[in-house]
Length: 330
Image 1 (tube, helix red, strand yellow):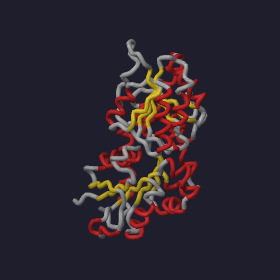
Image 2 (cartoon, helix red, strand yellow):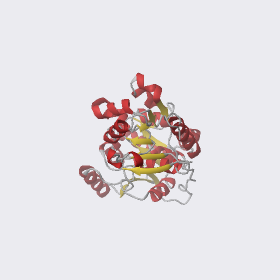
Image 3 (cartoon, helix red, strand yellow):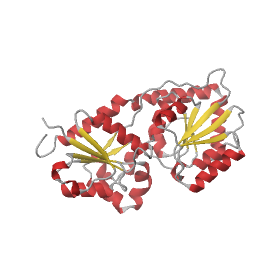
Image 4 (cartoon, helix red, strand yellow):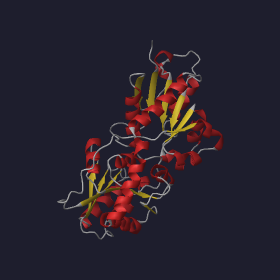
């Protein structure tokens, strides 16, 4: 029996080391075995029908629009899945014709948290599926009795959507002497890199560690007292999942994408862009044992949503259902 062929189109590559790449890499791992899987930066009709996949998975409505259009034009009978990112949901589908066209073209849409469904045009919600991303459980390693510092980490490349400036500004407002703010992520914006370097020079509480390999980043996260996500838009952040599955509480900007991941009643939100509120939340998490325990309990309650077996089962079920509808069933 010939195995079905799947191409995952990801504008991000391993070198980018961002959430989109982590999704593409993890999904390829989940699907290999039952399927032959290739991850590529794009898809064009030049490959020819013999080498074309039976199903195309595209990450990012706008950035993968050309690949999705080329595939659906060449093989209108073959299924496609479009995975919607934060910039898709909370910016591009309002401003980009290419992004809106991708929504229409795809056989199925995937959003990464339940609140995102409300951002889709009502007629398209019937073909949308919620698939929470996942990460293996990892035991926390920080906060031992002899630890000198309480590390609060932020993980995300230096770009405006992640709002690293709010994290930087909070460093001057935190009062707990044990707290250290560490930012992991590469520079994608010269002005933000300059701000990170200036903040580290002016305030020894803050450190910018730059881009680290994924395994090192996860180890740093597991050794942290808490993780901050200050983003202005998120589709369903991988870093939230990795924090929750590492037993590390999250301090999150109060935006729809984060609420869809952590729950509407989560106690660890702060207003987006409010460095003073973030600093107060950091101090409370570091100094109020009852509050810290509340955050940890709320995160632990969400952890089953982010189990790898659950993500793999949901993805494989969607892929199987779409492949079953091919005219010449594989």
